[in-house]
Image (tube, rainbow, N blue to C red; front, side, top):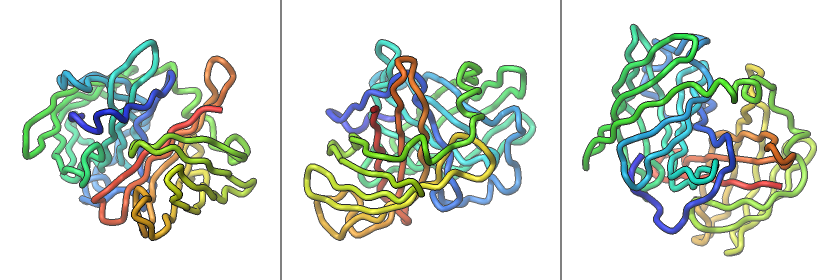
Length: 262
């Protein structure tokens, strides 16, 4: 949760989430295979850090311990997103650790190490520090029990099929279409074209596995590369639907987030 992407804040209404990777997205430190979180620890968290520029974040922990964090500033029940974090964590004896955190608010991404503690209670909490080469950010988060119902509803392609207009953390706007079987095709205002696939993640939670192939074009966020990661969609209080997609390159050097409401 660092100072990143100034001028490219994107508003996510209500339940902006930190998402977990699907196996192809995050790098592997070996931590998660050894000590995955308990079932009670899995789910959505809302938290704060001591970063004065971007103090707010939302978090999701899945069964394999992989993590994604969307961070920024909360205003009028919306999170103004300025970056995101991904990594794999080990949960054991009240301690959480990760040696492979990447912060995609930086280009190229910046590495960090996560150390902290958790409480495995009715309303779990996670707190700790992200240690970058340039400094340390402290944070604390509590499980968002109000979001549990949406998280525990299986992801459906029918909910996201059709046209979307998405804003990227790179500052570009894209138009995409998702077919009835999850095939993605689209292009950005810059002219960057891409194709991909969205598939409901195994396990019955509201998370999609997403893979996007970008054209070999310097105007693309990940030119000539394949971005893999996750997507989540949920209905807002005003009956509109939100879509969030977070992707990282195979080298984890770059990442891009996409957000839209229809």
